[in-house]
Image 1 (cartoon, rainbow, N blue to C red):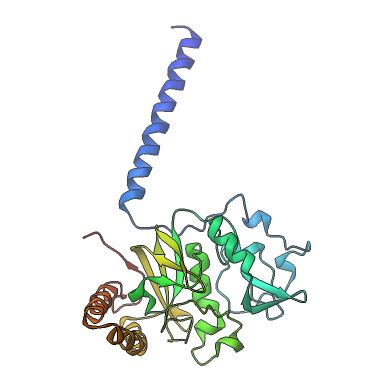
Image 2 (image 1 turned 90 degrees about the vertical axis):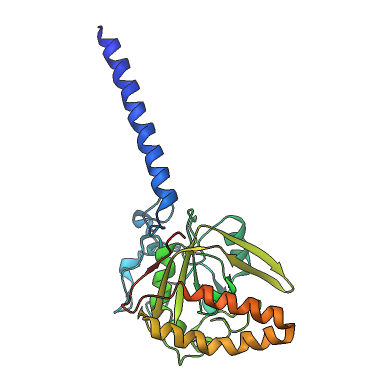
Amino acid sequence: MSTLGYLGLATVATGCVAWTMTAVAKRYDAHFSAPANDVSGSDGGAAAARLPHGVSMTSIALRQGLPEIPVRMRALPLDSRGYPIPYFVARIDGKPDFRVADTEKFATCIYYKRCWICGTQLGQYKAFVIGPTSAVSRTSGEPPCHVECAKFAAQVCPFIVNPRASRRDSGMPVNKQAPAGTMFEHNPGVALVWVTRDSMAVSVRNGVIFRMGEPEQTFWYREGRLANRDEVRAALETGLPALYDLAHDEGEAAVLELDTAVARATRYFPPYSTGAAIAMPN
């Protein structure tokens, strides 16, 4: 056989191997839970960690005690306290105001599927930072994030980490369209990172909320650390009276529906040892 013949066979063999590996990867991805989709990308990776005004993040005093910053967040500027300034934060008179979410960026995150925290393109997995009762309603008042960006926020955000902080003092924006009893109205002391492949933006009377699909992973945090089952249960119980008041106003059918939703939410509680709860197929 000629040299060209051998090269042709080698090319065909390489193509077959590549096709087989791609097919196997797709089958694996379809049957196993979500990975942490925070790998470096062409938009916002470590090599692009330059701030808008040409200042490197490494030249600014990063707040001590923070966990490792996800790769995509390393391009974000820092505030005077040493915290990364999330993508959604609006600027008032040229200064970031953590209490105000930029409406244009809100729309950008929805229509262009960008991360609410780092501002780069989302993958197939979406992570929501929510309160315990949002695990019951399966709704969020804020757009989804990358998994690692969401986990970082759940461990670092002053409003989430410090249950005694008011939302105004902590610098967190208030979404008036968020469901009653969720983290967006009060701090239950526990935050949940809900990882799913499916979500949908839904128009409501005064804005938009997000319906979350079935979770593939859930990460529960309290005061910057992983929460245990008893802490999650106690936090959920603080928000249930408000939900049941609304359900009773709507009638017996609404109460029964809420009972079912609460029971379904408890399936995703962490085990008694702290860690991530991985949703297993039925």
